[in-house]
Image (tube, rainbow, N blue to C red; front, top):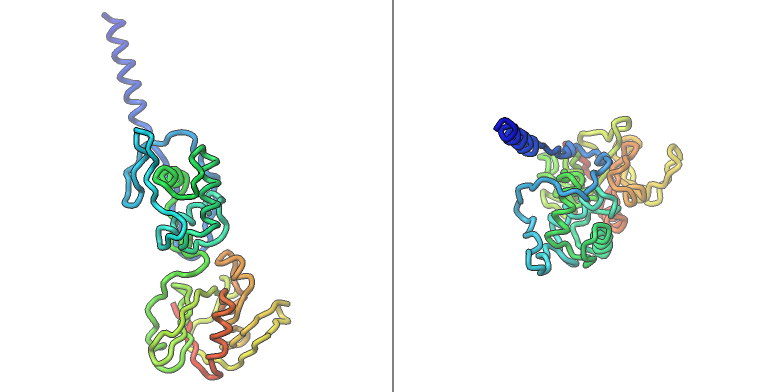
Length: 277
C-alpha cells in the first residue's frame, strides 16, 4: 500500500512538471527605423507548444493526407506578402524587399525553406509552410515590412499646403511632391545618421546639379537639389542597393532613379522644401 501510494505521488509530480513548462517569444523591433538585429534562430526540428491561431494563418494539413490550404502564390500582392518576405529575410532565405509582390525571388525563397524542412517544394505558401515559418521568426515591425520603401506617407505638414513644395516626412520616411495642396508624386527616402542628421525646417531649393559629384565624400550625387548648405535631395546608389541598412551624410536620399530624374525636371529653383517629423 505504501509503494502504490508513492507511485501515485511520482505520477502526479510528472504531470505537474510537464504542465509547468514555458516558452519564450522573440521581442519585436522598436519601430524606430533601425535595421532588425540578427539573432541565432532556434532549431525548428522540435515540436513547439501549440499557439493560438491568428487570422490568416490557414488550416493545418488535413489528417487524410490531402494537400494543405494554399494561402499565397505567385502574383499575389499586399501586406501579407510583405510579412511573408520579412519573415523569410529573418531566416536568411531572401535578401531583398519586402516588396509586397509574390515574385520569382519569393518563390525561390519559399522553395528553399520548404526543401530544408522536408516539405513539398511547391514555391507556394501553404498553411504548413506558414506555420513552420511563424514558429521560427518574430512578428515583423513597421520598418521590417517597409525596409526598401513603399510605406504609406504621413499626412502633409500644414506648411506644405500652399505653393510648390518638396514635403519630406522623417516619421514615414517619404517625400511628397506637392503643388497647391495636391500630391503629385510620393517617394521613399532615407536621411542622415545620428552623427550627420538631416536638418528640419522650411528651406528653399537654391541650386540644382544634375550630375553632381561630392568632393567632400568622394561620391556621386546625381539629380541633386540643394536646400540647406551641403544638404540636398538626390539619387543614391547605396540606398537603391541597401535600403535602410545605411544612412546619408545629411542629404535626403532617393532610391528610384527614374522617379527622381523626372522630379528633378519638375522642381524649380526657389521651390519650398519642408523637412518635418
